[in-house]
Amino acid sequence: MKITHVDWLEKTKTHSLRSADLRRIDDALRAYEAAPSHPSMTALRKAMHDYKRKNVRWFSDARNRLKAFSTLSFYISSLAEPVASKQAFIWCPKIDDEMRLCGGNFISNLHLSATFFEGGKEIPDNFSPNAKLYILAHGHERMPFFTCANTKWTAREITEMLVKDGLSTEIREIELLVCHAGNSVNSIEEADKLLVLAASMKTASESEKVRLRTEYARINALNTAVPKPLHFENTDPQNPVDLEKMLLPLAAQLSGALKEYGFSNFRMKSYKAPVSQDSSEKTHLGNNSVSPAGVRIDLESQINKDAKVKQYQRERGGAASKYARASDFPEYSVIWQ
Image (cartoon, rainbow, N blue to C red; front, side, top):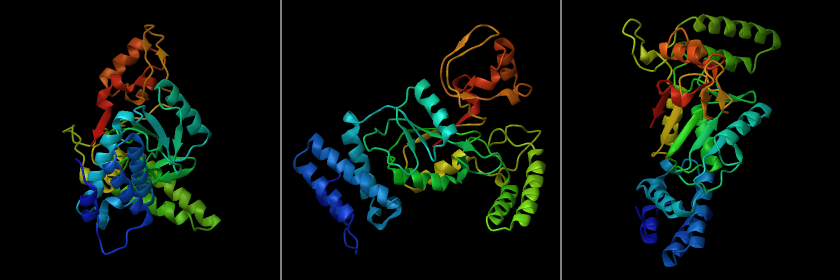
C-alpha cells in the first residue's frame, strides 16, 4: 500500500515538534516521490531503519495512530524487495565461545549469511523481509527465559533488543534454535516461586545465598517430578492439563511481544524438544542411511514414549534419536503466528 508525502505529513502530525530523525524520513520520502531511483529508495529505507532503531515503541506512538508508520514500512519493504538480500541469517543475544562454535555450525550447514549477528549490534537494513531469521540461544529448563553467556532475557527483552538492532518488522519467517521453546516448561505458580528466589539472590548475603540456592534446588527437584504437557493443548484425555495454570511456551511469549512492537506478518517455528547444536549431515550406522544437514532435535527421551521415535532408533541405531532431523518429526515443531 502506497502512502504519499502529503498523506504522510498529515497522518503523522501531533502537537510535538518533528525530530531530526523524523524529518529525515520526511525529506527522503519527498525525494523518492519526486525522483524514484535506487539511491533515493535506499535513502528512504535507511531513514526509516534508523528511526525505528532509536524509537523502539514507534508502533504504539501517537504518530502511528493512523497507521502511517505501518503503511510506510510495508511500502518501503515492497520497494526494496527486488534488490534486498534474501539469504537466511542467524542472531544471538550474546555470543560466547559456545555460541560462536554453535552458530558457525548452523551457518555452514544451513548455508546462512556468513555474519553471525549479536544483540546490541546493528542488523543491516538490506535484508529482505523474506530472508528467514534464526534465533539461537539456550532455553531455561523451568523458567520462561532465553539464556546464554550466563545471562538471561525475557521474550519482551529479546523483542526490544531485536527492534533496537534494526530487524525489519515486516519479516516473514523466524525459527527458534532454542530448546523446549515450543512447550510449557513450568506452571505459573512454581515459576513465580523460582523467580522470587532468583531475584532475592541478587541482594542476599553469602550465607543467605546458600539458603536460597538450597530452596531453589528443592522446589526445582519437586517440580521436575511433575509431568509436563509435551503439547500446549489437551491431547490426552486420561491426563488432562489445566492450561490456565501453565506458563505459555517461550515461543508464544515471544510471538505476543513481537506483535506489541509492530511485527504482524511473521510465522515462527519452535520445537517441543531440545535443539541440537550440530546440524551437519549424519550417516546412521544401523542401516547406513544418510540424514542430510538440517536442524536436529534430541528425541532420545521419547524412545519409550513415542512409537515413531522408537522405530526410528531401531532402524538407524547409534545416536539416531539424539540427532533426529527436525523435518522428519514435524509433530515436535509448533508454528506461532
